[in-house]
Amino acid sequence: MVDILSKVKEFRASLNEEMFNLFHELSHGQKPHTLFISCSDSRVVPEVITNSKPGELFVVRNIANIVPRYEDDNEVGIPMKSAIEFAVLVLKVQNIVVCGHSSCGGCAAMDFNSVDESIKNVYIHVGLVKDEVISKVGANEHLGNSRSEVIEKVNVINQIEHLMSYPFIKHKLDNGEIKIFGWYFHIPTAKVFNYNFLTREFEEIK
Ligand SMILES: [Zn+2]
Image (cartoon, rainbow, N blue to C red; front, side, top):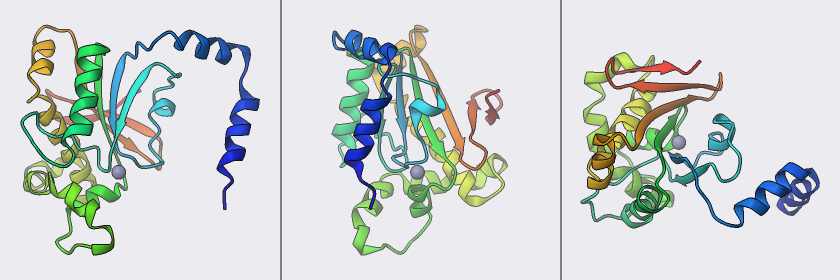
């Protein structure tokens, strides 16, 4: 069994003067530049793939990086909508990233009709967008080499469409006060792909 307490001791031992100073400075308040919405998957680490330090990313995660529509009143609603509101309206982030990834178990669960009752809440959660996402797979087969990759990428685009239903996000987009990105993290190569809204392709960031 991994001793998580020893991991904290390792963290404390690794702190250098620069990091101590950074945390001291951050104690006065946060001013993150980006709201980062990603899957909870342990292999997707927002700070690692964006080379970010504490204080840069306001992160909100759930299985399959699902964003409720503004008008939705469902189980994912309040935790996600409150984080989005706070990041955009109070912290005034400049960017919103929705980041999906390869081998996403949540997206795989969207593609099954049988429910594993032992994890029924996972199925309730992905069920919120399942029909919407799966219905768009046929028209987007060019996005990936496998059905699972297409579902994972369509899911990112679908959640961005949901973000557009937030009046304050739409307003800031129209005024050029915020940018929205759809990303796909390919785990085996650690490559990050950015969705191009004009070509409708995911392009490697390099
Ligand atoms: Zn995932």
